[in-house]
Image (cartoon, rainbow, N blue to C red; front, side):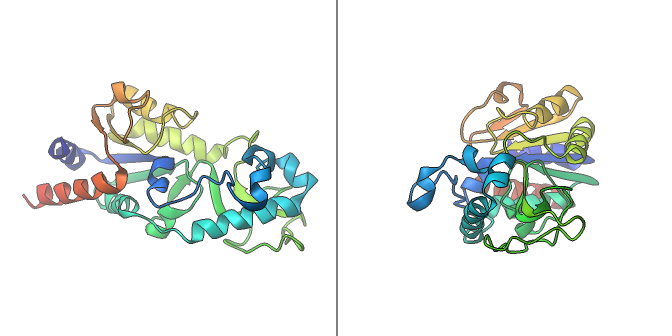
Length: 246
């Protein structure tokens, strides 16, 4: 089946990839549910909200600094690097991710649609404008927005917040235009992201799913690979390279 997908890739002009938690799990990104120490007293839903930040911004930043440090210790895996190679295959390539860990950027992609934001970045809690990239925050002296003076918060989407509309609209537009769409390491349960591969398939794209377990998307996919992204994607890169040389 990899050969068939490789031949489809060669014919496609617009390629779109959606990644979920599965590809990050292969790099050892923790789920942040806090098994030890202070954080076992809290649920993520109690700290990842605007209300929590306004009530105790120091506590929230202590938790996010802990999360950032954990993520900095992990590295992109072969699946992340293979997706960088995808960029050379299409005239128009779009990578959409539900992950906030920034591993796709660290692998070498910079034009990414991050539906849930990026944990290493900061935005203003008041005006929502982005601030200096990857600025470390002191929980006892939280930096202020240079535009309005509001406190800086992590650049992620919290519970109860809408996804960034410009990013979401572009993701849907790219899904509609896709010739081939890859759903990788995502449960296909969390909306609106789960609607993207369905929309692409409805608009005529070939749909490829890569996930160790079947999902609600599996029956709709033209090709389903019950595999880990870090194992299958490098193999796909090799097959495409051989097809190109042939």
